[in-house]
Image (cartoon, rainbow, N blue to C red; front, side, top):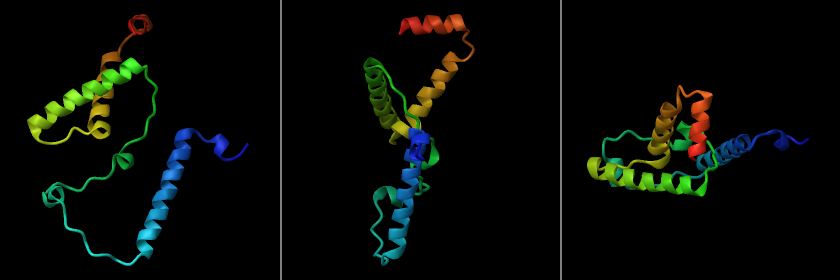
Length: 124
């Protein structure tokens, strides 16, 4: 069995991402310095710089029935629009919405016994 066959998909992706980051870092270190670009309006504010979601969080893959995927997408669109109108900032899907969705789902399922779980599954 080869090295890659023994790895999970997420481990292979993580290893490939790391290799890509290392290559990009090597390229940027070896290239001549360029003129600094003009900061965008967002950069001119006093917001702290943010790392990418991929660096802050763990990638998780799941499979949902199409109807649930559509319901999640619609909910995100509505919540994102309301949030942006209210606070004039983005509700990022991977950084904000998915953790919020999962946390409230976890809280809703916490404490269920096996019979309750069966009832919930029958409702799907």
